[in-house]
Length: 238
Ligand code: ADP
Ligand code: MG
Image (cartoon, rainbow, N blue to C red):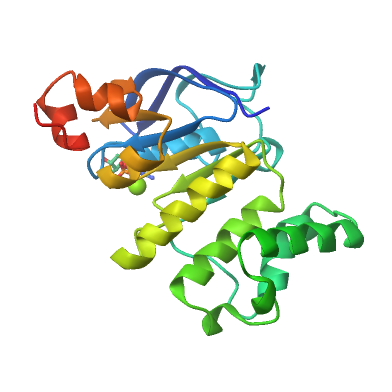
């Protein structure tokens, strides 16, 4: 569960081809980071995987099954956005429960998953608060909790830490890495922050103008960046 394959996936907005034919394999349990400059297509690629954008060509396979036409809610993936996108009038508990209510998960099972997610994210004491009564880091944890309770086969993160200050970012980076170690669920993580990429990734995908410039482990890219563009992005001395 959690294997994602892109086969010649393309995306056009009008006449503009934002993603030329792109191929990528994401293994089950892998932590894959998409890096690249603003506007290079990171979010678009993530949204194509999530099903929030339609492909203009090619296929997306999830666990070997063609999911190109599968609606987002049926892909078994959970997206965590950078803006907290929480419901301000609902308690933390209700925010976390929301996707399960939509999916008609039985109440006792909802409670079990909420308790487990709250424990994993140190939110147990905050379940009855409203998002406005939480710190930025706690709000981001609620957003992650809302993804966890769906028990997805993969998490998709779009710059989840970019609204946090530097100190908080370091802590949340560690928390997400620990979560990955514990759950062993595939994570696809978009960032323009090379430190996040180098410290969190099993595999880094460097994007430039919608195409893959290089793929490799942080060490592989650091030691042997293909060109100056990649070197610049991962802080390599080349
Ligand atoms: P990134 O996340 O790497 O900053 P995006 O995926 O948001 O990049 O955008 C990639 C390119 O696609 C940009 O040139 C952007 O302007 C364009 N784009 C993204 N979404 C749309 C849209 N809905 N309509 C038209 N162009 C879009
Ligand atoms: Mg983006």
